[in-house]
Amino acid sequence: MPEKELKRIVVLGVGNTLLKDEGVGVKVMQALRRRFDFPPEVALVDGGVRGLGLVPIIKEAEDLIIIDAVRKGQAPGTLYRLTDEDLCARVNQKNSLHQVDLIEALTVAQAFGEAMPSIIVLGVEPLDVSPWGMELTPIIEARVDELVALVIEELGRLGVKCQPGLEHDGL
Image (cartoon, rainbow, N blue to C red):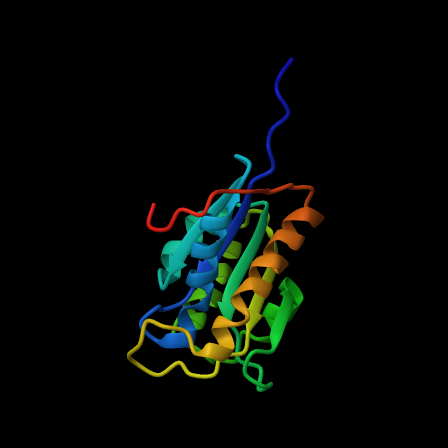
């Protein structure tokens, strides 16, 4: 009897870590890796600013959870949960250096005519995305734990149970 195929879930942290709060997606990804062990059907991907290089990753996913800095004009630190419908409405809003590339990557992946993954974006309104600084501002740093919890909650909705792991920085 063939084994049941595992659903492929990709958690994708994006952003430029040289632009302060712009790198929050990558920082949350790093925190997830340090704090939890994930089952084999879940891939954690540091998307950085890969742009169109994300297309193969997007195409392989059945469910895609993106973590990113999101500008919607609210107070810095405001958390967002956006669906794929929300993303379609944001195509014409170019509000970060890499977001255009992310939207383009999603569009190119869709142009291949294959089924698109379900997409959830978990984000936070940035305070400062000016060059150069690798640290998040304190208000955004204070939201990292909540973003981590939101990712775990989304994975739970998809039927995935994550186990707390040992903290292991730099591995």
